[in-house]
Image (tube, rainbow, N blue to C red; front, top):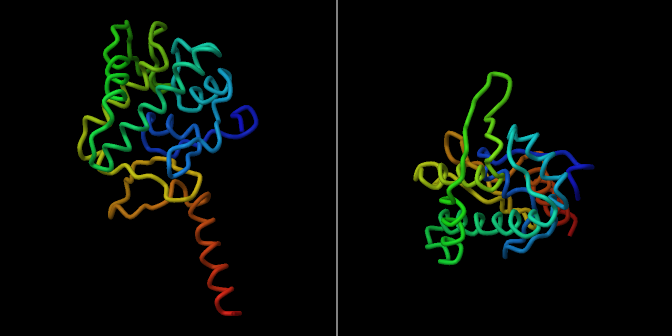
Length: 190
């Protein structure tokens, strides 16, 4: 699947979570479906997420750095929401990226969201959003993973009673309701 033919869905509640949701994941952490098949997909995603002015990676860097960083960040966030310590290699990799000295500038013009300076790389921008999320115990405590098979999307549960279960009701939630309905109907006929 590619963002060139399928729409971008931003349901995570935070940009760094939406970045992690650029793939569908098995419960074990394997990728089921990749949405960042090429650098053009990443550019489409950035535009949908209102991330403008970033130094974008080329094809090789996308495969080598961006997708590796996504997996590292996902591992760290999953460890945080499970209340476990993230793996040391993930922490070291994230810290290396997040603390890399780099010139960046944040602007907030009225017609756009955040606009980064031309020296800010995509990974650096996402790491800034991730540090903000990970540094807020209240917010990281509200991050959940969609329980649907082969989804694994992460989202910030901003519901008043913290009962949001699905990444999106019109996707995984409706499928789960349909499966429950089907099972009920089958048990009535048996």
